[in-house]
Structures are given as C-alpha cells and as structure tokens.
Length: 342
Image (cartoon, one colour):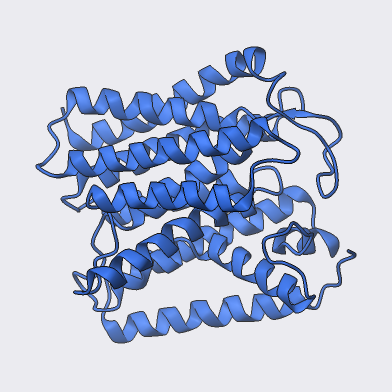
C-alpha cells in the first residue's frame, strides 16, 4: 500500500474514531467528568471533559491499524511503544485530575508522573541527542517534555486554542518529518492531526460542547514534545536543530508570557490567573473566534518558519530566528501593556 495513502488513512481513522466515540463518552462518562464554572472558568454551565478519552481512543486505534498493515523500519516501532506508554501515563494522570476537579491532584504528584513519562521516553530511545554528554541530554529531555506537556495544558483556556495549536504543530511535524526514515513520527503526527480534527467541532458546539480536560491537553502536549525529538532538522542547516522552538512557538510563548506576568506581580507562576495572551486580546475587544483565528494563523506562520530553517543555510536561518524573536518580543510588549483585573 502506498505510504502517502497510509498517512492519510491513519489521519482519517483517528478522526473517525475520535468523533464517533464522543457521543458515547458524553452519554456514559459525561455525568461523572464535568468542568463546573468557578473562579476563572466563565462558561455558562457544566461541560463534559471527555475529549481526552476520545483523542486517546482515536490515536491508539489509528496506530494499531497502521502497525498491523505496515512494516516499520527497525528500531522505530520500539520508539513508538515508548511514546504510547508514556502517553498512557500522562493520560491516566490527567484523567485522575479531571475526576478530582475542582481541586484536582497536587502539583508535586503531577510533576512526578510527568517525569516518569519522560523517563519512559528516554528508556525507549526517544530523547534530545544534541550533546555527547548523556546527563545533559537527558536533563534537557526532562525539561522539554514536562515543559511542553504543561504548556498545552496552560493553553487550554478558551474553545479551540489548545486543539488548534496541536493540529498546527502536528501538521508542521508531518511536513517536516515526511522524508525522514523515522516513519513513526509521520504516522503518529498524522494520527494526532486526525484526532484533533475529530474533536475540534465538539469543542465549539453549543449543543454538544465538550472540553479536552487535563487528560486531553497534557496528552497532546506530551505526544508533540516526543515527536519533536524523533526527527532530524539539520540536513541543510546547522541551525535547523532549533526548528522545534518554532514548531511550538505559540504554546511556548504563551507559557513564558504567563509565567513572567505572574512573577512580575509577585504571584506563584504555577497558580491560575487571567494573564494569558488570549484573555488579554479578548480584553481589548477581540472575540473568542477572532482570538482563535489569530493564534492559529500565528502558529501556521511559525511552522512555515520552522520548515524554512530546515531547508536553508545557517545564515538565512539566523535571519528567520531573529525575525521570529523580534515579532514575539513586540507581541509580548504589546500584551504586557493591557491591564487585567485580579
């Protein structure tokens, strides 16, 4: 079977299973997994948080099918097992947190579970490989995986924001990794893209509105963090290895911005607040949909930049990184001037 056809099929299967599972999950789990409005949460009524369950089902169904119909190159199947095992830990941890809402599980317990999932990746050979020193490489892997996992969770504060960035990043990884011999990255990214497409309409629906929950947002972040470590970026440019920073520019920017704003106010960066970039844009008059469109467009452009730096010279790549950093810096300055209550 043609490989490109299989990529498309993996996305379609994941999309169909995710979308098809949601009505049943809402019916049989929705009453027990609810996000009730309180504090910073302004939605009108309690909303089922079963999106993560549907995404997990869609992702697994797609990859199991592809495994049974595709001969994976030596070594790549082991990496895929590590990603799915680590993803299962993240999913269960997030589901536990969703069940215990509004209080949730403690931050230390959450970080321990995420560290365990990162360790699973390392044991299965999925880690940052920039340095000859294993201690440095593994330490950066822990920081990267835990940071990106929580960045997507932090981004999940308005309809479509988290899932749209996950879809954009997955598509970016599909395009960048397509020629790679690490075929599991291609299939997993396509399956994740399909799962996002299957869930997204439910996130916007007024009649059957569904949230990702911590189980979904952290799962998306973890999978994307892992896939970013699974392909090469420096075939044409010595600076291509920084491409993941552009692939994930929007989630990273929002996380860094929120933490800096909280610290500047003397707040704990791990405690919730209304300092998010999206909420500030809504404060100055943008609607939810306009904010979503702006975030999605910015993510698309960032991924175009990411693709470009893997194909051009180091000098040209330096210029791209400079422009991206300048745009993000100007954006941070503009957003910081918007006053938020609380």
